[in-house]
Image 1 (spheres, rainbow, N blue to C red):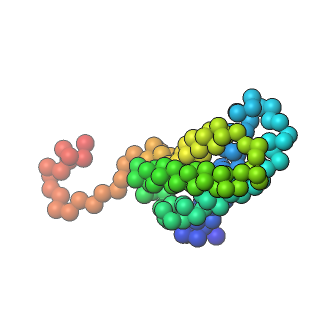
Image 2: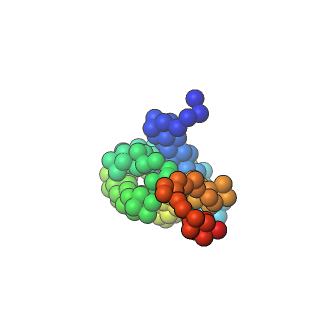
Image 3: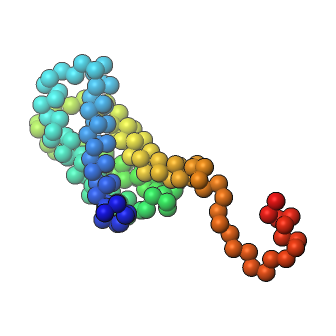
Length: 158
């Protein structure tokens, strides 16, 4: 049950992306209004969040961001996350102008703040396990098989 599998990885990233997206959007609202968000700005929060999370999931699936294993996460994946975020928030801007009545009131600075927070948090989540694995003291030495060893190999080992 605890063994890693592609399905568990995909579900973990889907749930974590949704939680991160919710948290960053809520935090962006609070940052924008100095932690005193007017109630009328929260009326459309659910619609804005739903729009953003659907766009993120679709674009992340397109970029295969849910398929990358932790140990293979690299700068290339961070680049894909950046491009995916740019696409998501660009499409969201278009959706905003199409459905302006449903999304108002919305301070556009909230979207910019959320873009930056989401990009950082989602990238850090995916990078975190690799950082932990590479910096762990348990991986200081790796087992090595030496074939054809002779007496001079002692100087290599010490």
